[in-house]
Image (cartoon, rainbow, N blue to C red; front, side, top):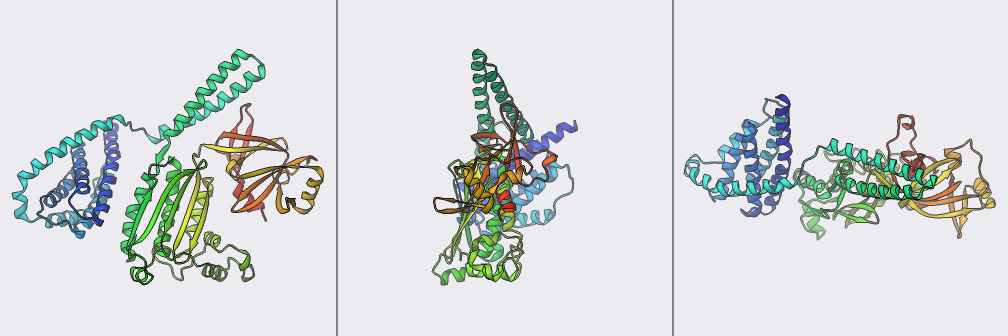
Length: 537
């Protein structure tokens, strides 16, 4: 019986998430355009739906609070109360409180969240006692169409099946295992030479790959769900900072891996906080510069060349390169002699760096942008920064389509297989014996008149193995520079299923994962940014 009650509470909380998001979205739009129209009706339906669901599962506190708020909204709809900014601010506070009430109900916590009685009093005081009695009957009439609309929505929702995220991850893991087993089977049959068996194994392999493609889609979520969380953040931070800021989003239908979306939330919060505190100017300053009083932050998502690209741009003051360099010297991150050789914009990602003289509530402690870069690189992505003083700053995050698969280029070092991310590979070069000797002596090659710095992966990955006379160089591009990697053999392009590393590799910083080849051999996936960071000097 207790398990059934827990399931009921959990189902109610899951269903309410969507309605709370709808409620918050409507309120943020109404703040900019306070009219009793479609967005107000969205707000009303969301509150009414939560109230109805709460009554079904006996969430009495949620039901009574939503009922009180609904009375207030009825008065606004009947033109007996004006839809003011103060009223919408109260509704936003009520939204947060409803979320807290639902969380308490789901956790079987009988204690009411803080400010419960205060908010109930505020809602009640907004309703004149005389008006409450006069509109009691019309309220019932107005709710009838809402009930029908709600029923239609729930009927349409039957096409969607809610699946626990853990069960979905288990299914994806089994599909990955199936792909590996199918590849091994095809390899064994091909080696035995039975044409009929090989044809059957190929058919099975093709079906398995189709299943894999469909299964990976289950983990994809629209980026709009991620972007929607930041509307409220910008609203609250712009109010507390005394600035007028709007958030515009595009590409909401672009899909990305669910796990990646969860990991991206913190970096994007840092970027938005940075734009509000460092980028967007106060209204008076914007007017003096001839800019619109309302500053704009734009978030855009799209697919490009097998990657997901997320852009965060603002129309603020931009980044002063001179100020960045002087602050870096002042904080001891670089020497004054190195100022001419360093890219100023790259310095903002250094741990402990900040251009703020004093820390604020939003930033200034130097613990934000390095977190952004580290998280993006952990997701096998990269971040590009462009800025024009007086016009604004743009961050572009480029990420793989999936965390479970990698388009890679396979190489051999000694007798072991390794995989490089394909998007970072520029070209491959045959390395004859005399060029190999030059590389060992000088550490670079002359490639079409260009001095190409090179790393010998044999000395890094297998220092005890003998070096072959004739070898190859894989030229990769990282953070705008080209670097050569000397390897023993080129295997070619592969699409690999990423497997997590075991405890034996927990200290191997230059290895980001592994994959199992068709014959059962293990190939390690190299973390190229970390490899160049450690050995690139």
